[in-house]
Amino acid sequence: MTFAENVLKFYSDLRIRDPLPDGIGVLNPYQDAATFEVCRNFYGKFYNDNLKRFLILGINPGRYGAGITGVPFTDPVKLEAIFGIETSFLKKRELSADFIHAMIDAFGGAEKFFSKFFINSVSPLGFIQSGKNLNYYDTPALKKAVEPFIRESIKHLVGLNIDRSVAFCLGEGENYKYLQKLNEEQRFFHRIIPLAHPRFIMQYKRKHLAHYVKDYVQKLNL
Image (cartoon, rainbow, N blue to C red; front, side):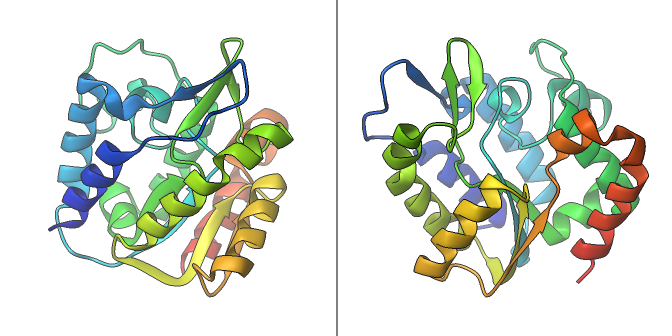
């Protein structure tokens, strides 16, 4: 099977089977036929091979990016404008996606970047509470409830022809702390390199955007 076929199988099998705390819902875009077709087109275009790639792990999908498109850090606007994948999704931009695609351009473009990296998340499914995004670590009860799912998901991810010598973590705080601790127990990767989270950069450090793009490119160019 190609990298793309393995990714699509991984997405189609994603389920959180353990009960979550009251009031918290799961964001699983891969159960939507239109979203899955987007994934089929996108991964078929860039991952129709058997190349080994490095894994980049965000936190979990949000409502305006992967929570709609199924492609991490790619909103409906970029799907159409950059990749020519037209959808009926609401054309809303995501701040994190703006940064990631600026970085991909600086790295050398989509074909070069996606031939070397696969972006996913510590939790490949997202969470909603009161209509708003929720990170897997935002409440102790949620973090405890989803840990078996996260552990199994990363086990499957590293089986997708991933180079385990190094992984990259989006987020230098809670996401990195959690992933580092899990990695000490499970030995998924030889080492993990943290990167400032795109949302943090775009919300609080936008004046220094060029600096962060350069930092990403330098660290990703192993």
